[in-house]
Image (tube, rainbow, N blue to C red):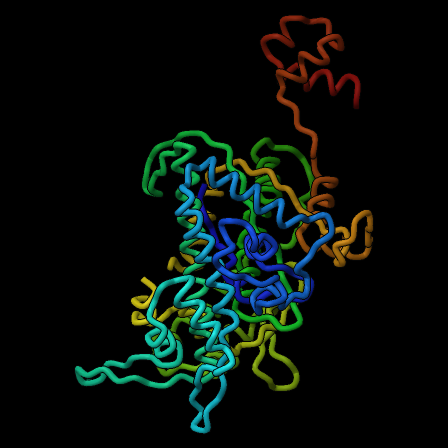
Amino acid sequence: MRTYLLEKSRVVFQAENERNYHIFYQICASRSHTLLEDLKLGDWRSYFFTSQGNSGEIEAVDDQNDFLQTMAAFDLLRISTDTQKSILRLFAGLLLFGNIRFVDRSNECTKIDQSTSDTISQLCEKMYEVSENDLCMWLITREIIAGGESVRKPLTTAEAIERRDALVKILYAAAFAWIVKKVNEALGEQMKSNKSKNTERFIGVLDIYGFETLEVNSFEQFCINYANEKLQQQFCQHVFKLEQSEYEREEIDWIRIDFYDNQPCIDLIEGRPGIIDYLDEQCKMGQGTDRDWLEKLRTCQSLKKTQHFQLPKIKNPTFIIRHFAADVTYNVDGFLAKNKDTISQQLIAVMKNSKFRDSLRELMAVLSTTRPHYVRCIKPNDEKLPFTFTPKRAIQQLRACGVLETVRISAAGYPSRWMYEDFSRRYRVLYPEKKLWLEEPRIFAEKACSKYLE
C-alpha cells in the first residue's frame, strides 16, 4: 500500500452534508469502550472538527460496530493494546485541538480564549502529556531570527487558526502513514524505491477523491481539481489518443474524431509562467501576500490569452479556472499559507511533508507504466438517501468525469476488438481452407469479411 494525495484538509474542514474521517465518529460513539473510557470524550456534536458538515450520523452506518471492526483489524496487524491506546489518544487529541478558540486583542494580535482552557488542559495532560505553557505560547506566536537573535512575534487570529490546523493535519498524516506502514509489514510487502528497475507485475487499486466545487473554493479544492485534471489527462491519453493512434498504426480507414483535450488547462496550472509558478514565487519572497499573487495572475499576459483562466467582472479576491468538469471560482485568501504547509519548529518540538505536486507526479509516473481500467463512482443523490435516484445529478457527474465523451468516441470508432487468431477460430466454418485459418489468421479474417460483409 502507498499513500498518494491524502486529503488532510478533511480533518479540519468539511462541507455541508459531509463527514470527517470515520475514525473520529467511531471513537466518539464508542467513548465508553475500555480503550477509550479514560479519555472522557463527548459525542461528535461536541467537537468543531466533526460537526461542521452537520452529518455526524448516517443511516445504515453503525459507528460503534465499525469501531470494533477497526480494533479487530489492528489486532490482525499485531498492534499491541498499548499502541492501540496511543493511536486512539492521538486521534482524540486532534478533536480537542479543533475546540481551541482564539480571540482578537486590541493590537491585532490574538490570544487563546479563556473558555477553552479546560480543553487545553485535557489535551496536554490526558492526551499528549506536553507542556501546556509551551503549547499555548507557540500556538499564538512565532520565532523570527534577526541579527543572530531570536524574537517572538505575535500572530493574528487567522494565523493562529492556520497554525493550529497545520499541526493537526501533520499529526493526522503522520499517524495515517504509520498505520499504512504497519499494514505493509503485516502483509510482508517489500517496498521498493521509485528508482528500482524491478519490473515485477502487480495489480493496483487507486482510490482517489473526485472533482470538487463548493460554495467557497480555496487551496484544498484547487489541489483536488488539479489532481483530477491530471487523472483526466491520463484517461484521455489512454482512451482517446491511444485509440486513434492504434487505428493509424493498423492502417484502419476512419474519420478522425475531435475530443476535448485538457492539456491547455494543465499548462495554465503547472506551466511557466503559470498559477503554481507564481504561487511558489510569492511564497519564496517571504513578504508575499495572497493579493500580490492574484495581482500577478491578473497582469500576466500569457494567462490573459488562455480561455481557461478568467477574472470576475466585479473585482474581488477570486479567479476562475475553466476545468474539464466545470468552471470553478477560487478565493485566494489563505492560498500562500496553505501552500507553504509549514509549521514552526518550536511547535513541532513541543509535540515530539511531502509536497502535493511531487506526490501527484509520482502517482502519474506509476499510472503511466500500467494498463488501467476505470471505475467511475456516481452519487445517486446529494441527500445520501437509500433507493433514491436523481437523473439530472447523475447526468452532471457522467458528463463531468468524461463518461459521455467516452461513449461518443467509442461509438464513432471500433470498440469491439478481436485478436485475429480468436476471430479465425470462431468463424473458421465460413471458409473451407483449414490451412488458411490455422496459419494465416489475418488473411483469413480479411477474406471472410470481404466475402460475407461487403
